[in-house]
Length: 175
Image 1 (cartoon, helix red, strand yellow):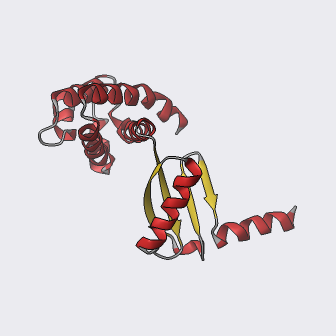
Image 2 (cartoon, one colour; image 1 turned 90 degrees about the vertical axis):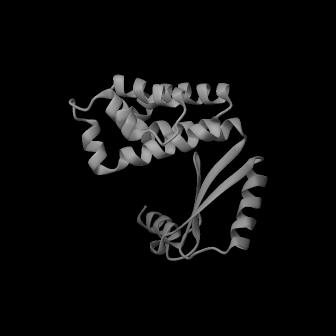
């Protein structure tokens, strides 16, 4: 995984640089998201590795309708370098660059039960105070957590789940 990120990093930086220079950061974000989602389909992923797939065919397959010319050139560059399978990593790194540039922290809260909008707002406000930045918060539910929640904000993970507490207790008792 780290090798894929290492290979994807220069492409993500280049994509973000072009998008920012064009003033089209959001459009590129959507186009990259589309291309990564298409490339993640198992049928397409196998096709992208086929040496008989022409560059133009790959670009047409992965480009959203009405994509910027610079975006299709970028996909062509990835195709020429054999890096189309890295689209998910490129997209993730692009979104990190975008969030950093816009002073936004992207976080995911995974809870044992669905959180209300009021609870999410309270959590967003607490994270905003902690990080000193705006917070984009995604929510997910994982019943195996038993209770509580896990907050993943990139380099910071806060595990307040019962499952996590039980695991720490088990480790403490075993040691």
